[in-house]
Image (cartoon, rainbow, N blue to C red; front, top):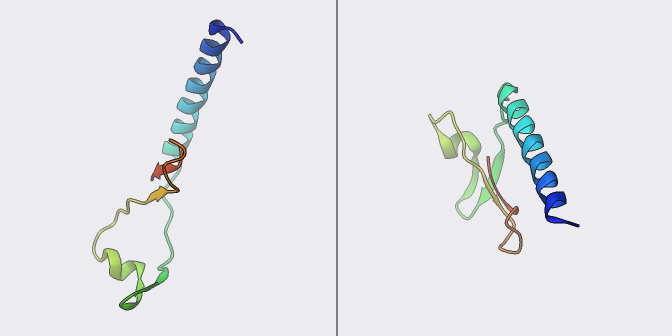
Length: 73
């Protein structure tokens, strides 16, 4: 594989990533069920955890082995 091949592939990936980002932004938000979690202090619901806040930041981290394994949503 040549340097030009790599650059062309990078351009395709960038264009697809930009298209995906636009599609994701165009989607309406969705309501999340009031999940119940088991904690060391007993059961707690999502609503209890986040109370009056209307936005949730979820961090999905599967470890250090891959730079793609941490996803911020």
